[in-house]
Image (cartoon, rainbow, N blue to C red):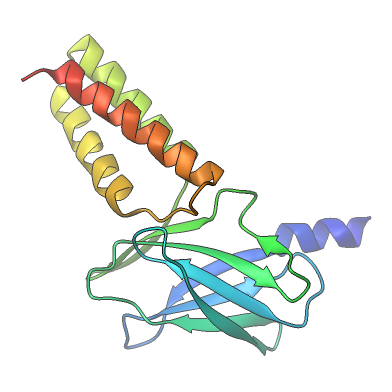
Length: 173
């Protein structure tokens, strides 16, 4: 039982910049025993590309070649037994900036919290300028955040977009 807990705790996807490049290095620690890992990724949309990871000492690794207009990357992993690691239905989502170099995890929950805080500020008419910055940030992320068509992520994206539109309506003309 303890060994299983350790595997679950250290499994997942890590993301790094490749040295002297804007490409991304993906390191995968599978949650199950597998002989092959394919990393599925998207930068903007519901179109997904795949790269097969190779075994390197203790993890599977893959390099993702990035576009010039990179802002967000979404990932999930396919294992050789058809199992999927999609971060418990949340995808592995990262905000990425190549200049300055910056990687940060994104979650649907955090985006929802940001919208709730912005809505409180708009409704109370306090710190509306701060709320506007948060709204613009969330809008810019929702425009490009990838999701799997017909998935819970797509539903979450549409729900957050609807909430964002409602808050903008509260601001008036």
